[in-house]
Image 1 (cartoon, helix red, strand yellow):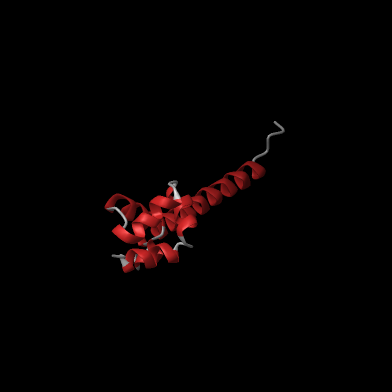
Image 2: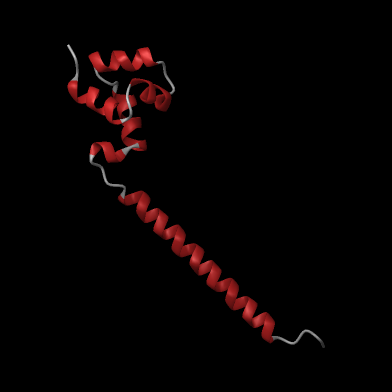
Length: 93
């Protein structure tokens, strides 16, 4: 009895050996997953690292990435502002 849904997931990940490398387990274990289904913990791990295969959007991680980028830009702007002030100040006294 083959679990078609989990077999499709394994195929989308690149096959038995690619999935085994991703999960750091033997390819024999992944072959067994094709018949018995992927265990819940492994399935949750796959959903976390490859949400695109499960139709899950990465809103939270995208939001974090934007926040980090904006924070970097704010810090960079502050640094340039400080540099400008130092350049205007006369240190030759």
